[in-house]
Each structure stands twice: as C-alpha cells, then as structure tokens.
Length: 538
Image (tube, rainbow, N blue to C red; front, top):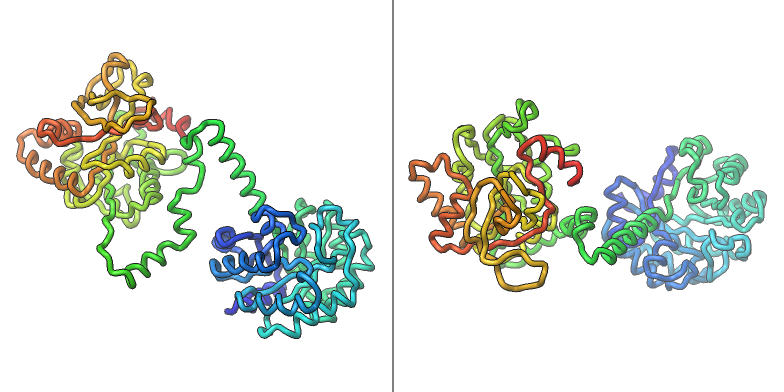
C-alpha cells in the first residue's frame, strides 16, 4: 500500500490511531520497529537535532533533506510538520511537489505567520494568519498534489493564541471547506478541556488530530470517547535521547573511562543492524567478488553439573542457572551475537536436554562426570578452523572484555584478572605467572604466559593474575590447538586433563600464549558464594 494511502487510512479509521515523533532516519526506523503505523516529522525535533531554534531557522530545504532520509529508512508514512508552509501559497505548492517526490505521505501546516515560533513559547503573543489567506494556501496545496491520497492537515492555533473556542471552530470549518484532509486542534493547557469542548462542537465534520504534550496525564480512552482520529506523540524520542546522551557523556567525562557506560548503551552491532548492514553484505556478495571474510566461531564448554551448587543444579546444569531473568549461558550467547559471532557451539553433558537455543551447534560429552575440559573441547575440535573464542560456560564478564580479546592480535590469547586481592586468600583458581606484571602505565610491550596452575591462593602477590576461562585463537592458533588436541588425546591421562594442562604443554613447546590483563569486571559461578555475588555484579 502506498504511504499516502496508509496515512489517509490512519486519519479516516474509526479507531483511534497513533504516530510517533522522529527527527532523523535512525529515530524513524526505531519508531517503526516499535510498531507505530506512522511517523510525525516534528519541526521542533528536527530543528533541535540540527542545533537551532524552532523558529524556521532551519530552511525548508534542510528539513526536506532530513525527512528524505527518514522516508528512505522506513516503510510507514510520514506526516511532516511543515510549520506555516514556509511562505505563501506559491511556496506551499512547491513544498507539496517536493514532498511527493520524496515519498512523504502528508504535511501539516499551522495558521501562524512566517517565521513561526514554537506554540509552547509565548503562544499568546504569536500573530495568526488571516483565515482566507491560510485557506488559499490549503487549496493551492490540494490543487497541485498529483497523488490523490496525499494528505494536508490544517493546524489551528486559535486556542494557543488565546482567541477562544468560537474562533477555533470558525477557522477549522474554513480550512475543511478549503480541502484539508484533517484538522489538528492544538492546546497548551494541562487538561483536555479545550480539546473536548472543540470535539463536542465539531461533530465529526472531518478527522481531528491532537498533540497531548501538555495534557499528557489524560487517559487515552478519553480521546477515543471524544472521537479523536489520530494522536501525535510529538517530541519524546528527542527528549529521551537528550536525557540518555547527557547521562552518558557526563559519566565518561567524570570517570575518564568507558567501562561504566559500555554495558548501558546499545552495542555497535545494533547500530549496524538499524543501518541495514545485512542488506549491504548481501549486495557485496552479489556484486563484489572478494575472498570470503573469515568468521569467528565461539565454543562454550558447559558439560559439567556444578555439584557445588547443590540442589540448584539437580535438574539443570549450572550454565543454565537463571541469572537476573536469563540463563547464564544465554547471556554469553547475547555477548557473542553483539560482537557478530554467529557460529556458536555448546559442549553439553549433564542434563543436556536443557540446552535448546536456536541456531547453536551442540556437541555432547556424555562422560562429563569423569572427564575434564579437554575432552569437551576435543568433542568440538572441528570448529577450530579460523578465529575462535573458547570460553567456560560458567563465567560472566563485561562487554569490553570480549571486545578487547577480539581486537588483540596473536595466535593464542588469554584474558587474566590481575586483581588478586579479591581472591585472597584460600580461593582456588587458574593462577598464572607471566613475562610482565600488570601495570596501569601504558606499554606496547606484549605479555606472555609463563606458567598456569590450578591451586589455592595463599597471598595476593603469589601470582601475576588469574585466567578467567576465556581464550582466543586466530587461524594459525586454531590449527596449533587442534593438532595438539589430537596428539595429547592419545595420552593415558587425557580424560582427566584440563585447559591449564593444554596451555602448559603449549608453553613447553615454546608456543607463545599472549595475555591481556583486566582489573576485575568478571565473575565465575562455582558455588553458592559466587552466585550471591552475581546481583551485585549486574
């Protein structure tokens, strides 16, 4: 259905309809994805996003450029806030022509003088247009549209200017007779009294549009009962964006870091999705004959029960424990997806039927109770081809940890927590010694693993850090790991071997294992005490 026809149907539908403000292509797409059937191209929001006042300081051609991006990004109709039509009847004729060329479904013009001022700023002092002049502007627009469903909405400012109900009725009727497809009746008082009084007098002569920005506390059913056709939520995407952006930049400014905000903002993958990057990738596959890009695989080792958690894992493995509304391993899958890792495998064992995630490959270690992690990794060795992330299934870590690992160059790279104070003393872990200790001072000198031991920590300076159970290989590193797995799988004690054993074997063979340090920002879930820390972590 044409966008113009969609908008006209919204106006004439006997049911109350709603459209949402947007001010650029991104916000327009967000509004459509939320379910809105139409978009309000707000003059206030567009001008504010451009950093100017809502006083026609942005030219009509600049506004046209913005709404063209909005139209290209969406499939639902856009009703443009066209201010006063940007001039006289001749400007109005040209505006309609240009909007139709850009697939804009309709325009709303208000009966004030050019240049206009926002209705909520000294509205009672703003002069109104002569009725006949404004009616002529409407007629000129209707006479020059080429699409019969293109809509012109006449916005009546009589109540804003304090001219009263009778003037509002008089103007609305004149604009209806001039050909307006709907009347937008505007009010700035905090109750809907003026709107309801108008609706009672108007008597459904043509559709009525309202903007309840000031009388927002009114139940929506009141508008339905009064016979309103369309409600415009006029500026809330812009206002919410201002709040969110201010909080984010202030946090970054004061902390001089991104760690506190990274988990609270949309991932870059969501930006790329909204930009429809998938379509570009498909087009590149069709038109650009290049070597296929390497894809990163993810292997999650989640075969164990987690017997230390007692009855909590009687019916589900610990990787499926509900952590703040979502299974632990599901949080890990979400992190992978945000970083574009789609080839995900889970090595399962205990209560393996609990793992039912779509688009995930499964490998089964049915001997989970008597074998170590290397047997589980061996089950999924076919995934060790190109870049690969290998992770334990019972850990949580901040988004930046995975991002840092993916960005780090190296055949085999592990993540280690240098903050051992929180683990001291008496805790067991995979503690490491490295070629260089952690330092907050900047250095380009790489750090490599010298030794890793699973043992109890007696004092904080006993080791350089703790491996958190997260590892990355590039194509060469994956080949090394796969070959080593094949070789040590022949050993008699292979079934009892763990990941630290593999890392130590690599070190003995002088395979460089690179280390990137973090300072906290992760948790493992091994026992009830760990589980109690999860809420604080989140």
